Length: 180
Image (tube, rainbow, N blue to C red):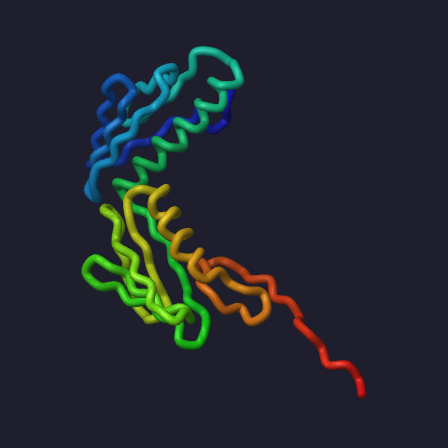
């Protein structure tokens, strides 16, 4: 039995869950998420809890069991609390500015980078070197953060680049000057 798959998912107050032929719709104070799951996974609701069961112990069903439970739990947390990723821009002149529907990045190139704000995602820049990405879809928030980070990955010699808030950059020593 999957340890993750057999754990029940608690549904907080104010969140409604609707299951129609394994198309799960989760509504909350922050929005609505809809996702279709595999037809073999049975999703049942009992006393403000969701339970996911599988028909057999085959390898495919065991894999889907834990995955389905994790995805549904992420949906419930997303519509109730939301997800955030914080990025730091390290380097001289590296700045980010959030406008109405664009994110403007200056990260050492000869041109500025404009990123259009996807639906369901908000950008905040409390300081020019700090970028906060918020949204209700965990996968989308992580994907946008990874895309922004890919424009200028942190380098190991000076530590310049776009890094996650809790990321530690392993530094290298670089060249040393030999004795005369």
